[in-house]
Length: 129
Image 1 (spheres, rainbow, N blue to C red):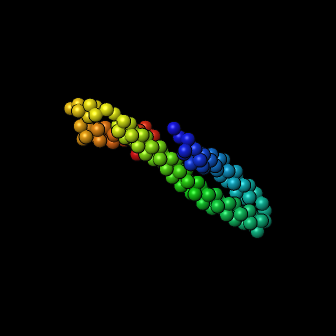
Image 2: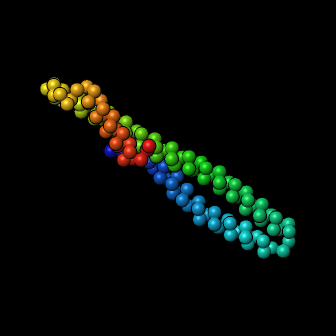
Image 3: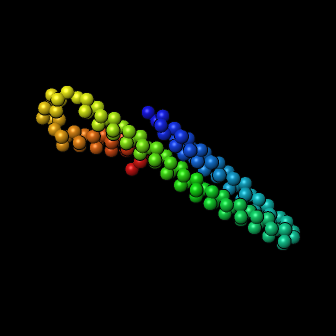
């Protein structure tokens, strides 16, 4: 069912993986800052701390982009899937016999409520709300 969203989902999953891999990188650079205080020269210490600070800033900006990409791309894939399911369900309604709509529980209002509640239930299942 997710065939057409496979590229979008792949981008979102790649962003998730890189986002998760950034957390151990934080600990590595944090350890390098702590190790920089062992240098005797103030100039050398300052140089290492400033380099690590720059890396922290760049890593933070990268995480900002990856978080945005992760949540946005996965949400877009879920919305496209929900839209396709809704249109297929609506198309199945058009293929019903005319007698199907003669039943009292199959009025136009009941059918539209059923379609919207099914899409809402599917969205809830995807945890998009």
